[in-house]
Image (cartoon, rainbow, N blue to C red; front, side, top):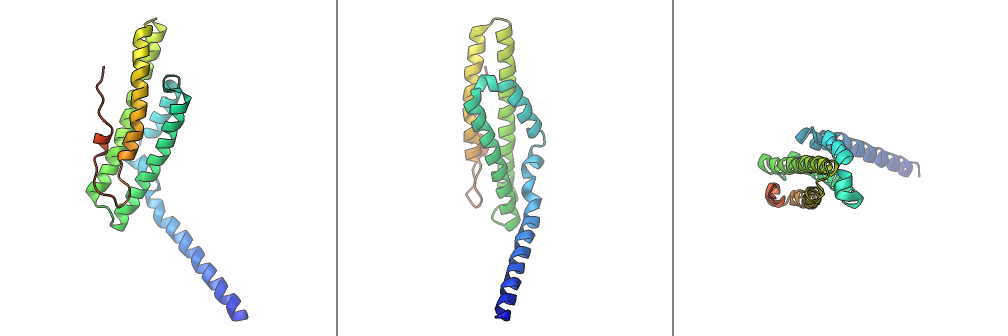
Length: 168
């Protein structure tokens, strides 16, 4: 009986060591998004302050969800690169997807600021056009995130998934 308890305690101890070791190993990729796009956190804060009224609360929630997905995807891409499932070029495509996401956030923020100026200056038709443009760009964010390849998937071009939209 005592050997059984000792064996269970030993197995539990080994499982705990393995769990903590995997957490330490994985920590190198936890900041992959911040490393790829250091300005994204600031951009998202500015975006939320200036663009929520343009894209609406529902799209804002979707964008926040996509930002979380993006972080997870980039961490997975990093882990896949470290484990040999992805090469450096494939990992760079993941990072390029994150950069496309950040660029789209910056673009929507700029459009929202322009729409606010149009509203303040009484150019309501121009404001409506910018709101429509910002909402279309907000929808494109989901495509960017979906365009980032999952770990072990074939190569893709996240920038192409973003669907470069015509600018006014």
